[in-house]
Amino acid sequence: MKEGIALFAHGSRDPEWSRPFERIAASLAEKLPAVCVGLAYLENGPSLDEILAALVARGAASIRVVPLFLGQGGHVKEDLPRLVKSAASAHQGVSVTLDKPIGEQPQVVEAIAAAIAAGR
Image (cartoon, rainbow, N blue to C red; front, side, top):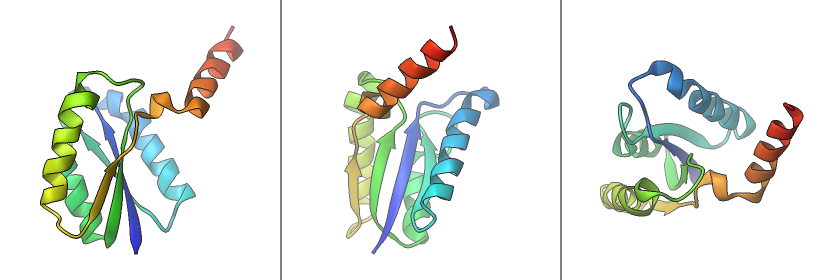
């Protein structure tokens, strides 16, 4: 059973805004070559539906949706669960799970704090 990871970010019309997220997706795909990785946006970009369909087409039978948000605001609490439920219903037989926002992971909090402290 092939695994997929759908990274999910807010999105912006400014193309420079998405570059860090594209680097995260590329780095993750390099670190996990057996996993299908996709990057979806709430606005202006491939949608979660489009990315889940692409991951399923690449053979993913289980997909983790990872919000690239620092915390749980309205998009993560309300919009994203609705989008995940809708997308999952379009792909019967595929397990789709929603992770907590990446900013709530202790390693991420520590890495951000260390980066800020190093920049003093």
